[in-house]
Image 1 (cartoon, one colour):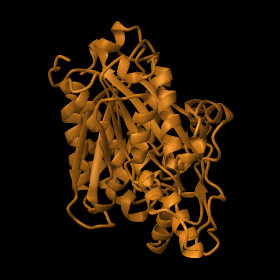
Image 2 (image 1 turned 180 degrees about the horizontal axis):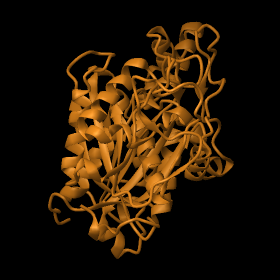
Image 3 (image 1 turned 180 degrees about the vertical axis):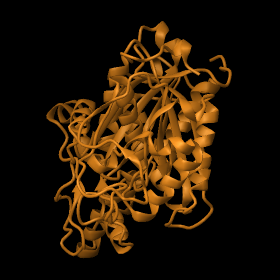
Length: 421
């Protein structure tokens, strides 16, 4: 394939998602728009010994997926999430399977734990019964969700997995953007997948980073995150290729940026300098000034330290606009999907741009006077004419990533791609 010049526009032509709001993009958008949290008690494993008892569990796959995927029971839960989201995204993009027969396709995925839950079940049985094959752990590696997508959909290009905690999914999307721009692939499936497991639930409880109530980003009295699980996939391809085959882009992925705090393993740099660097890099990559950004889908975990550091980053990048810029806090509704969070929040950002309105969160509790943000509360907020939107992911270890999306098409108040930037 001919290599493409840097800066070439890359379209999002398909999206797929699974989370605590349901299986599929329609369920995701319906729940987001209603501001309805999917966070409640869950049944995956016994959590009675922990100080918190909530998570946004995705539940069982729909019958249509079960019927169309022989051998699905042999897949880890994270693999099932990934495969469902990828198949939905490919179908929405109007691409034929197997992918390798139509285009040079690559898979770029993020995951923190892969099939860790199934590994926990294996060792529980092994220690109890002294039976089991260690070889059965191989399909449960952290790279398994991306590999499952490539294997089942016939993608014969690069398959790359990122595992940089909560930034994994966003880093994968950024890498896919670079690969499409460079002409390494014609189509990229970019996303992430993670499932609830005892390791992360116990670990974050031990750190006292989990709220006993559904998480409340940027609100007074917030006490930590809520866990979620699921997957999200975006189909990326050169805009000209998408238009030539008659696809209708949902948005343009205009830029990506990344940085590291180099500060602490489990706490963000309180100055927000690293997070601001990722935002600045993404906007520079997109060729857009901060003034072009109409809203930000914040990382917004609901931990006191993270939200405070993110506010500092927003002030550094957006200056006096920081307190006026509408903020979307997707984790308040679907929980923290760890390695998949950046991917599903990218999908949520695309949906907000595509529909021309921002999803709300419940306005429970008091605002934090130290964080005077403009969080979208209670009702959807129309955003006509937004030139760009940013989604941020700020991870343990100080890994930061940001993605910039621009609208496409003839939605009310939008500009066409030729007018962007």
